[in-house]
Image (cartoon, rainbow, N blue to C red; front, side):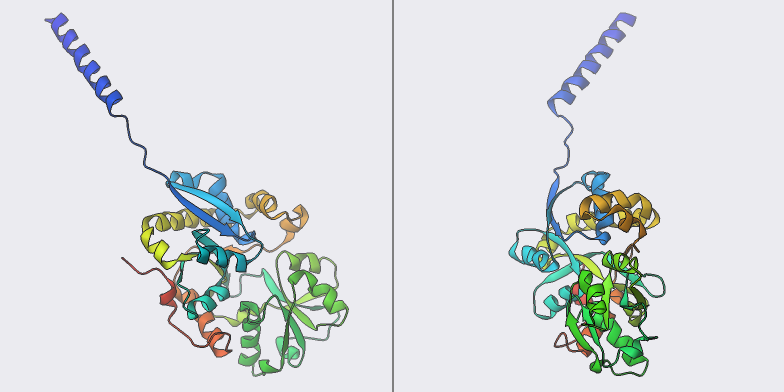
Length: 318
């Protein structure tokens, strides 16, 4: 009897092994997403997720393209060369109002009122200016006319009883602000990191104000986006991408020093500048209330022809 039972057990085990070898476990197919973005501090969560294999664990194969500017990013998404990009919010707002069907899928950098300080209005260290009101009638530079920073400064001036229409705005890269101020070509410049830290280290300029304080609450500065039809057709992959970024952003916000090697490796920043600069706060929650104030300000100052409901920029429920 014992020998019969043992023989049956051997047969059963052999059958199981045979069945297992005939029908191996299936590994879910990876979904490939082509991503493009201009290297910047607010990509820390993306780089962290890459370095830890978080996308792969979520079934995503991320193929990365680098761009020199936000304009190149937008062109790549429109042209279909890439699937998801990251760029500044004001350019996405302008695209939306001109019927380019971009949808926001995850937050990049955010500004929290009275907390985020990774940008500012620079003036000469010995300038007599005490508040943004003193910039009325002056020449102020911005990386682009109608930028979030420029509109934030205008809002601050007007809300404090001034007239921002008297400010003469000119376009100038952040890295050229300090020299332009010293040469008397501009009175102030809207700067951001890492250029701001480099310039402040010289002692020749100082921060007059954080122009983004002109916006209420939490404001979205940059976002990950895609074409509507692609996002709708790949909704599950988009949701997994956003979930990974959220998990990575939570960790990155709490471990800024740990992100420095990734930021340095991907941006080419000098290590001392990367260590001293004010780093972007990465968005965790994501909703239209972070976008609507910017849409409204863009419409108020005529950088877009009309205001619209910010919900339109988000992928609707299926």
